[in-house]
Structure formats: structure tokens, C-alpha cells
Image 1 (cartoon, rainbow, N blue to C red):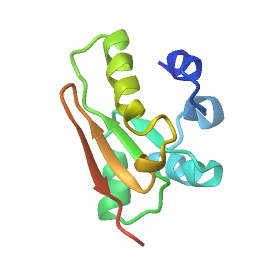
Image 2 (tube, helix red, strand yellow):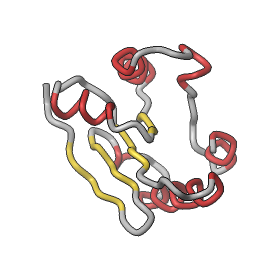
Image 3 (cartoon, rainbow, N blue to C red):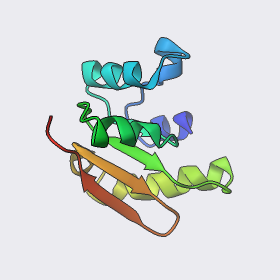
Image 4 (cartoon, one colour):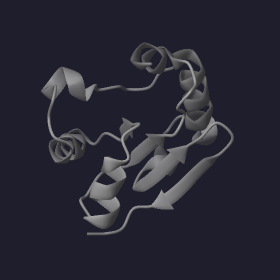
Length: 110
């Protein structure tokens, strides 16, 4: 999926390349340092920023289980094209990407 995102012109920084095995709160801190939106299938990130009010530039939560990697990538690229790829609309939001819809929820202020 990373290769497809890069090919589509998105900046990608893979957490596994920077701190493989880091706990989720360290990944959120890393995203803040690099001003990166977190792309994940792990609902724990939503818990960290919504309930615990941890700051994050944004989170995109993929809810696409059962789809092949190619299909998940296509759905994600469609979702990212919502705002012409600038990611402005995704900033400071928890964005849930499903096969038939994309939901935006503003992240709480700390």
C-alpha cells in the first residue's frame, strides 16, 4: 500500500521504518513531530486521541477487513481524492474509511 500511495504523489513515512514495534502513544508522538496523519487499521489510535485527548495531526482508520490489499488501496486512494490530495480536510479529524463511505469526526482539543 505504501508504494501505491507514493506513486499517487502522497508523502509517506512508515512508522515501522522509524520505530518498529513502538507502542501506539510513541507513534502518535512521532506523527506530531513529523506532522503526519496516521493511517491505520488499529482502533486503538482513535482511543488515544478521542478519549485520552492525545494530540495528533489526524488519523485515517481503515475499516476494510475482508478486502484484498489492492482493493483496500483503491478504496483509500478514492477517499484521499476527496480533497484533491491536499489532506487539508483530514487534518485534526478521525476519518473512518469504509468500502461505501468515509466518515469525518473532528478531533477534540486537548
